[in-house]
Image (cartoon, rainbow, N blue to C red; front, top):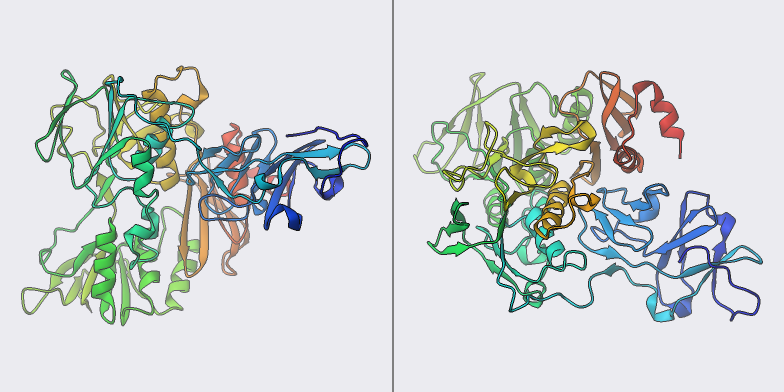
Length: 549
């Protein structure tokens, strides 16, 4: 790949385009010749150096040509959800996707600066790429890595352990209290009636082909680090070599009068999602909590429930995270679809005349909202309450497991990853933070795997350096956030929030901490690349930065 000029004596090969058709430092999606199969190819240019990849992100098939190409990083980043791929190999470097892109052979013909195909016909037109030969367990290797959890971090960890880099040949056991192997959890709030089999991250043969054992419906009961033993909820006792804790979070509930009534739900699993849509169809639904989960559930229920109301304690949606202006825009978007809002009030009681099923929610202003179904979206807490007792593993005051940049806890051989951890964020001078993002959790799992496999501590693969990237989709509109702003002094807008096309820059002490965008791709992806290189954007430079390549 790359610049490899073909002489006039070479065979005639299909032309794709002229070098000048691609801006330097840019990319272009082009059609493959018909005899090379159907589809397109993504060309990326850096000077006279040309790379070629499959054109769609392996996560949700977004067109990578709408994203960013950073020659300095040697990566292309998806505009939708921030997945990042190496332009040399197509290998995924940042999540939420799990699979690699195909990289293709192309050459620059020196005589006329035409870019031509130079590989075998059957090599083109492919999309995702996985390891061709699954790595299996070595029967003579008695080591056991236990991965506890059924989400993004756990899945990424086991995949990387058995992947071509780590080539871990010991035993791997995934212990999960879920009913299903890891699945695409963010889809639950957007498609409540989803069949869990349709959102599995991998099918069952993926695990069997790699000799990965799975115990579902099972949780971790205790850890004994001195003996390197764990006890599971089924009273099984196992000796481990290393253990990765990726137990995620648990939805908060409100211990209000009437909390034991029927038809009060949280959303965590496919079973929860299916129960909500089954009971909510044609009924009056009250959602408590102006969170992203709450608003996504509201959007999912419009057209299915007879009435949807949302209760929030803040005066506006997303007031602390995105600011009042964007919160008001999102609220108006929901109101236009028929959602009723009760903001600046607290729920005090779930009411029922029969003592069995919820019928109304009483609020702090003295009003009541009729409710056949209540859905809670009032935050989460780390799932560490029971199994860490007497383990010696350090947590913060809320229960989040403390880890370093290698996902190591304070106890040798015990790692933690995903939403359950508090970790050093490199974009914030290694300030310890807890962030519940799907893609970030996968990055944690990957870093844990490299360290479990004893990669050199000096390798960049062993240290977490991922830029947080979050998205929410409501009524077909996708709001993206790159970076992390736990607080901010001001918001600087480019574009119009009221028109639904904007970029919002969250500034603290003169520095941009995060960017939220709607209909302004690829600004969020560009900002993620910018931060990944260790750059700092000051508020005075925002306009110039937007216009820069």
